[in-house]
Length: 396
Ligand SMILES: Cc1ncc(COP(=O)(O)O)c(C=O)c1O
Image (cartoon, rainbow, N blue to C red; front, side, top):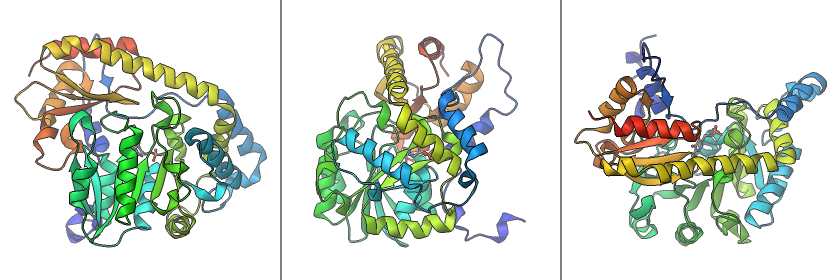
């Protein structure tokens, strides 16, 4: 059916996902054998989950009939309770099963959150560079994104956010550790955003998809320690990265029980319930994989250190490391050209796929033209050396 007949479709209000877009750059690509593609475009674990988790899923598939049926809209009680307990330990706070809900991925948690907060024409403040799916969902909901460009050290400023607040603002969104910039937001900064949101009666949405790979020990912020946290905070999480469950679509949201009830309408209508087998896997992970996950975090911290310590030859050629942490490094290139055509040339000429900053910034934003995101989680330390060698020897 020709799309031209549907000019007012909500999907027309946003752009094609950068991941979908960049995959097209690989079509017909024929790289020399000694220069295999380094794919640094997507933040997704490439390996399957540990065997014990897969076995738990397999056993549930064979022996637990309920794993094939519709279940509770907000997720299995056992998983909600285990997640609340784990979050309680992580944030040194008291969380109950009823404070959290399971969703079909963290993207859906964001979508449900916005559906439960915003109407047509409302505004949401989003630091830039942003996580593109956040922007896409706001666009498709008719919610206006108010970009908040980050300042020094790729951190957003609460005073600048305060200036963007209007009577249509409903929420401020933070992602920490950040996608795409990698930076870990200091606890004091997150607290200032929380205080700002509370003072204005807004929601503070904190997406901590990468919290298991934070370099800091102990609670990364104290928001959950405030007994009134759920009046302001809506917290998002993903099981995708922690337990390599991307394909099972498992995320979570912690929020006021009234909000969860509103979100339940959305979740019931869209997916009815999160997939049962993924929930079995996530529960097994929460109960058995703390040590394994701690080792995964150490490996990612080693890769991060390799980026930071190996950057000197690139810095000598004018590249800048703007942010680094969790799955990502965010860099500025030295060339007098836009990052988008440069990204396409890098695929063909240097075998490097990384996303241009323009995919994380508003249209026409000059900073996006100068930047790239490097999603390094799937590349080991020798791959990082290869990346830097290729970049250092390349010029447009
Ligand atoms: C900040 C952020 N939020 C959410 C998601 C999506 O997570 P999920 O796979 O759980 O939907 C991602 C995935 O890249 C992400 O980077």
